[in-house]
Amino acid sequence: MCGIVGYVGPRDCSEVLVSALSKLEYRGYDSAGIAVFEDDKIKVAKSKGRLLDLVDKMKKEGRPCGHAGIGHTRWATHGEPSDVNSHPHSGKRVTLVHNGIIENYKEIKQFLIDNDRTFLSDTDTEVVAQLLDFYYDGNPIKTIHKVLREVRGSFALGIVFADHPGTVYATRCESPLIVGQGLGECFIASDVPAIIQYTKDYYLLEHDEIAVLKNGTVSFCDLHGRHIEKDLKTADWDPDSAEKGGYEHYMIKEIHEQPTSIKTTISPRIENGMPDLSECGITPQMLKGYRQIYIVACGTAMHAGMVGKYVIEKLARVPVIVDIASEFRYREPLINEDDLVIIISQSGETADSKAALELSKELGAKTLAIVNGKGSSIARAAEMVIYTHAGPEIAVASTKAYMVQISVMYLLAFEMAYANGKITEEECAKLTKSLMSTPDYIEKTIEDLIDDCQYISTKLITADSLMYIGRGLDYALSMEGSLKLKEISYIHSEAYAAGELKHGTISLITDGMPVIAVVTQNTLMEKTVSNIKEVKARGAMTIIVCDQYANIEGDVADYVIRVPQIDEILMPMVGIVPLQLLAYYTSVNRGNDVDKPRNLAKSVTVE
Ligand code: AGP
Image 1 (tube, rainbow, N blue to C red):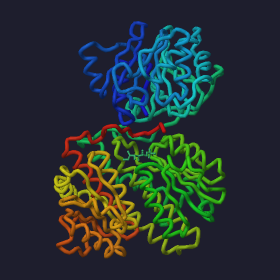
Image 2 (cartoon, rainbow, N blue to C red):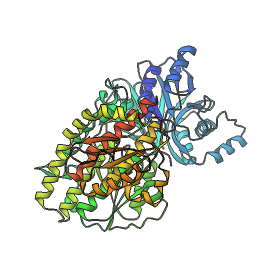
Image 3 (cartoon, rainbow, N blue to C red):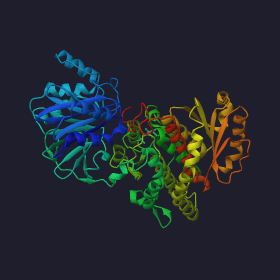
């Protein structure tokens, strides 16, 4: 879960590497480093801490000057964050950066120690650098091939050989890597945002392919050195979309981008007022007749799946099981060719979700991926793909990706329900129309609630712990609201099905403890309000999120946050907004690094 970059071209390489790494810090940010050919010698600069710490260090100690090199931003897996464990790592004639994990590094390390090699760091990466050096015979491709036959795991590597100045080699297995081609310059990167300010044209490097970047151009070969022709792709992202654009943090910018992201995602999938996924190659026939549906994902994406479960079951009347990818993959899931497995992922690179997809395919189930990362591993491996068009999501805390994931869940549920004959054409068109109107409501909700949420968050900042409660779709929202708050504010919180409280958890309620109750489902309102009264009677400070017309008695709530009333089934789309804003402002008010919360990384490409 790191970011790697590389550059060959006329620009100042250190500057390009630092700038590209700054767009990949979401992948990890506990140390950073670069290696650049300076006067035909590899010069390395690296430092524990954020990229800015590296920049400071280079200001004091000097930075490598040249036109070809590699860079890395790290999320530690093997060895604590420290200067010495930071990438790049070197053997005598080889220096490299690595994203991923080398599973058999211990055996290889022992083999190298037995052959008189010594190690500086605790990383698995240094083992690859030393092994390359051990086998190096002056032929980089041959040596990379030999090493790739011996290492096991997931990796994307950017490599420079001391006796090939000005050339960068790259290869990958499992971990993603793209190769950008600009005018007289070329790049490698773990993700498109890193290079988009320089070029929109890029190649997707496949497993066991090697890219050779030299004299500003790139060529590709297989492990035997045989030339490969590849298709150049063009990113449809605007370079500005990966910038903060005047906002203080990416997270708040991305919250504001939600209405546009929904429009861009759903518009191409609606024809004559009806959902139509043919643009994604999916016909109504492909969505019907399943025995059961599994939705498998991690974190926020899994919470989007929870919304999907309620909506698909309610409308299409097919049983839906939502599973955490890391659980699903190890418990021999009871699926077969009569089932559909839906994988949801923003990055499309999450290791557990990827493994769950592979397992589902092995077991014969049909697979459908809902993915934001274009050309990502999950998108490429699934039989059916619906891309969400959220653009780059940089903040570690996901907001707009969740929003587009649930908007796709709605479209899918409508089309499935109609295909299964569970709703009429008229009902389907009515629901689709309501969905199309949500971006305007969301925009209004953001504008109207910013001040309220900023104020109410000041009541949360000193809490040790809080609780989110709700029923049905509101429970699904509570789970997401709670995750959002804890990941960026570092305040402990739990999401609970409101009716389950009195079976144990109500004992946690103490005087003044904040309880955020989500009550957007009118059909369940009375029941949830009773549960709110129960916690209120035990001293809780209650914050209620409900629609604009909900009749909430004065003594039930300390604070009421009202969102527009839209079709009940679509209420999560407006209901999630205050939960995102509360989490955001609580984090800001506690002085946290909102976009880069401690211990986390955006793309979890390791188990
Ligand atoms: C949410 O705010 C998280 N950062 C996290 O839970 C994330 O949704 C999860 O890791 C899944 O990532 P993916 O969508 O890229 O697969």
